[in-house]
Length: 597
Image 1 (spheres, rainbow, N blue to C red):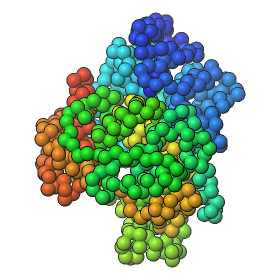
Image 2 (cartoon, rainbow, N blue to C red):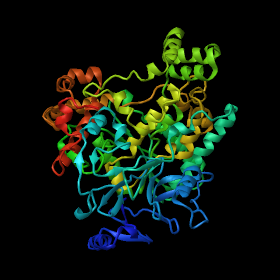
Image 3 (cartoon, rainbow, N blue to C red):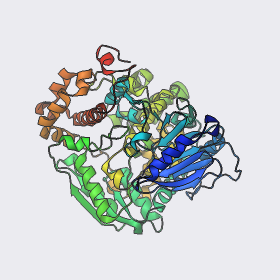
Image 4 (tube, one colour):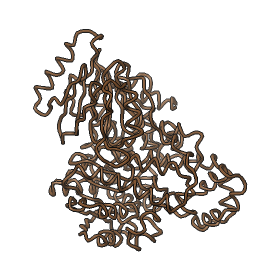
């Protein structure tokens, strides 16, 4: 999906620059004009054409927008002269989807919806403001004129991939964080409309069965809305609770199952990465046929990372190239226009077992929380003593922020995370809910650039705004229903899940697969990383990196995913170094010399 909007207010002078830009786009057969309102022109480019919804005289909504109450297409406010800020506030409170809203008028701005399903970049060329979802397909003369690499941001990316969706490492273009807007007259100015922290702590005690019913209803609304625009879809079935919930929801909602042309499970060789039995139980329960695809361990090459390195953000959503390539190929073969996945459900439903859940209860209820059955339940779940759980809970915020540095990065992970606007805005939220917000920020990685997204839409109903807001509102102790991970979700969907998944305790993982992939790719990765730009700048610790790139370390510590992340970031930096210089304010030499922030 590609879009490009051009905005130049009449008071900025003659519209010759905008006219020249339109003439340039018209000469490229891959671009076509999609709409105009006043001083705002909208074009769509290579890839599937997005849905365009007029906002009257105010502008356009690009992508899918649904009513939060029933999942039907959202209705534009009746008042045609409604201010952009008021329309955006209404979108935040009454709608959801995968969209960007671009407004003309006296205070033009571009707003990115809280799910982050569609990217939004803003830059200026003289008096002309441009808005797009990426830079790759934008004609050269319309690219940001003064791009440079910000090495402070690059270092934060290396420490925490989720930051790639909270800020940009390219100076000269402004990213829009989900839930915020950028001014089109001064893109350095932003306005926040939505953050996760604003939904925490407003709930009124309600019976668990009523909460479970509401949760199931919100998931159904999200599934019906996001899948309803597609005639042919593929569903990823991992075998975990979240994908099982999606399969049950699709079967429950009439007409949707007929649109599924493939139910796909990827499995690795080791037991923890092979969830076929669980995945089959989910599809057999609804009468669907599962396709299982083996993930072979193969040596990676530069092509695996450089093919997706041309975007404005690093391709952290494609760290398993063999899975990405296989799913994209199957979607193309089946004519699927979207991939449905349970991505993000871990954070939304609260999969993270932690003594910090008790810390939040202590903050809310005082010492009497120590007499709650939650204390013993957490101790059993965490396989620790009651006193250990109480001790960590009393440490509270200190326990939550004690994140170590990454094994190969020089910047501590927690220091990087604090730069994410969602996390920095969660200062007064309890440590357990802060942990949930960190999880939601990490889930944004799954909306990024990958081969699958080049074929169709990435559809994640469990991170749809109505579901996220409802679960943010509930205390972690309620979401875990007495200390059991995703306890409320298990109760909400008990009648839709096979017992094999409902009662499952352990979660599958690909940690060993990542380590094996890195071990098979050591010849390439040693050259790519040890002799690369990140190590040269001091972003990666060469000594620790060299130690990590040994087979025995990979098998013992299992830190392959961090190395794959670094490889993707290195490919991105190398690509952009061919075209743009280092930032004058945050160049790699300043970083290497000790200018880390």
